[in-house]
Image (cartoon, rainbow, N blue to C red):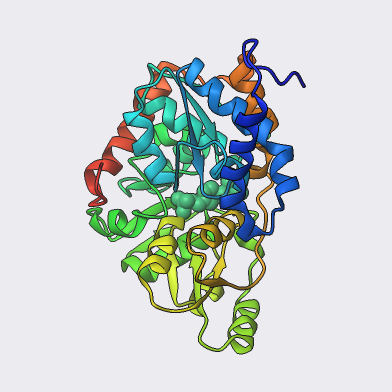
Length: 344
Ligand code: 13P
Ligand code: SF4
């Protein structure tokens, strides 16, 4: 890989500074200076190319730590990334996340060029339901409102009444003017939302391949082996996991729990990236237990992020047909209207 940026290469002093900057963040994750030396030319160039090309990088909390701490301009959950995408002033958004997030950014800020570094960055939930499936559900349950999880394609969002994320699903479903609500496509989240909202939820049969792997027994064992631990689970986990946990919610909800709690040790029942992020951001707290990697999220790395900035391929640029984008935007706007999460 050619390591110069439009003819400019980092000087020795630039690289030394970059290594120090990275090491300060990554040492808690047991990265050595030598590890940082290996990625410093890449992060330096990505950060310089961002300025040169008027681009910003939005990254989900499940991204690799070298993306989060090396090159991201904003890190968040699905909801906050969508809000952030709306406010981007730069010409280009490089989305270090998965395709449905990049599509959402394009729908909400269509004037911007949105780039996704890897074509492998899909999502098992988004792939688990089609626009045709939603049309069939509407025919089967006439008059029942359809809430679709943000982890869906733009075409699916276009057929729904309102979009929800893990951080606002309970609030929005409670507010829908019907005792019965269709929530798609996550079958675990659908089961969790019933008792949490007091509604009869009609669901679908897809799952997140990451959160589907955790079991209630694992959580029980974790608790029995670690006295005083706080166990925080993502809403996409099986109800048996949720039952054994101290908190259930979105990735940002888990971060807020850790930030505001006085406990020493936590287990995060979710993708590994969040645990790594919090180890860096809360160095005085302990994070215990195993996690699961999302192959879609981890398809993004420094190399393909640099390449997409340097010379994007047509298939890496996200475009949504106007008719679908207009109707999908209506579902997203309904979500913003129905949630009390601050818009800023
Ligand atoms: P949140 O970050 O919105 O909780 O979503 C988790 C997730 O699985 C995204 O793919
Ligand atoms: Fe999809 Fe699950 Fe990966 Fe999130 S963690 S992108 S929901 S497969």
